[in-house]
Image 1 (tube, rainbow, N blue to C red):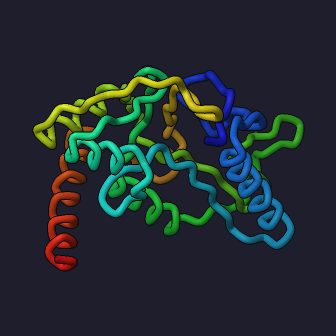
Image 2 (image 1 turned 60 degrees about the vertical axis):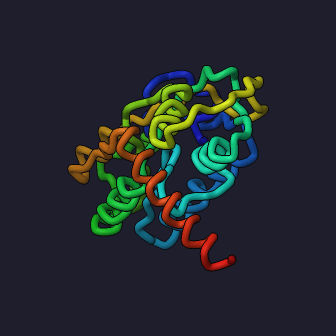
Length: 213
């Protein structure tokens, strides 16, 4: 979200992120600024993580994967924004968790090479660091929907709609710093991740139905 109007792909932590296009994105940027200030003033090791389109079991029910799955199973239409011309760097939840664990085990220290004359946005003289955690493999929205249809064995009825205000047409994470510093790169393929979610969804909601009946 913080990358806003940036059109350079893939999104790098060295990119300028001073032009968010939604209040949600602006709040994320402000979190990073306040975290750096605390790190600078009090020497608190602080790491900011920029997650890219997280999906999987136990996710938010108001997000696309849940909404699409529920609608398709109920034979209801799904809303496809920007007429399907969206690209997202979908990142499976297990990959996100692994990235978080690795970051926790490696708190940042101050960057002695950091210069105020050419400041690097992702680090500081303070113990502060920013990482992208994404799959580094953007997927077209229509391919994402196709993966859901395949996993469910049902086709979706699609309502094509314009892009929503504050949304961006594409995301794509540069994770080179994650690889260089922590030796880690998320790699769950979209078909595998979607299948895992659908299996969880069917199991979870079938149990819930039994418990409430």
